[in-house]
Image 1 (cartoon, rainbow, N blue to C red):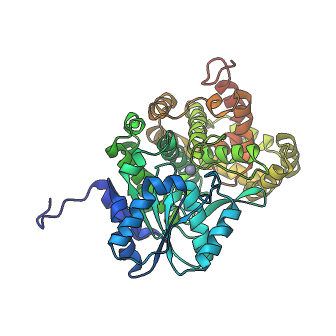
Image 2: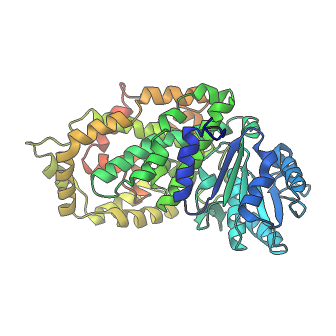
Image 3: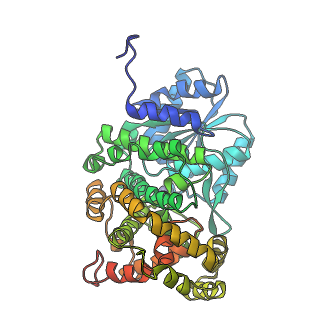
Length: 472
Ligand SMILES: [Zn+2]
């Protein structure tokens, strides 16, 4: 308590307040047990006397939506009847697919009500885009701590056969009820834990990009994601058991990651090579697929579980590189790397060899064109890296988790820690290192390994008898 008799704010609440001031779209975050019953207060704080409409699916309506409708009624907020997606007698099979956006946008066009989305990844993305199309803000009540996309701008929606990110603002406000989240379907909060764990590897990638002058770190935004990350990740077994305090920390970590992306106008603060692995597997699994499971359930592994394996892949490569003198002064390492650097024509040939799907080749060509550098620029960059490697290596070693500790934490939270658990063979994982490098222009540990000529030796080690993924 402070002198005015108001309870002191927790470090997470103070960090959230600061991050909200820097966030582009979101103005309010309420996290607490039973918070769904106070949705009316959050709605009024954001939208005054506006009309509201709850948007849910049958499961999330039962879990929280009906209590939220009660709260709005008790708060004397004028409300439309709830919109239940997939609730018209068909099985509750709502996907992040454009046809649901169209349906929802059409229903919103008949009212001036502000949507209150009740759900997780799919419902949030559908409402995010449909509300934007109707030129309206929205409020989301999170029903699982399953990923950091609640507070990210942009919606990931399958359109004309491929998953696309549509530009649209993040929600104006977020309510997260820890009672509802604790009761989420099995695996959803574990998925969120893995998506938060990814910030360890993503932070390492940003440190590398910063050191090489590719993308400078913005200190405030870095702090938002990284300053309390080890605390948020520190009790994985409590996530598995659904304990409210651990879920409260997880929710803050995920929401703050979204605020950081809003402030940066980029996913860089929350996403690096580990997310490139996951995007690659999405594209390979469903090059022309219509359904997409963003946060759990269904046939494909959740976003978080894929990102968790991607994080281990990234940390394993870091571990190898940190054990090396990446570029030794006094040897001809830099000149050798420059000699081995492929011509642009050779890059195009390698893309054709590495990818079977034309759709992925197109992505790879576009992204590589954005990050390919001529040999002289590579030489300058490697000379700079050689200079700073001792310092960068020490800082990375302090920042990153050891691979064994990361595996143990993921396992304790109920996440997969072997590629086979998400349907990937070891040879597929090995090939993914090369492919993930191609599909995104962002500078990551993959670029560090390729540019210094260490990728192939690293993979020989990682998939050899003494590596984390020996031949089975
Ligand atoms: Zn993610």
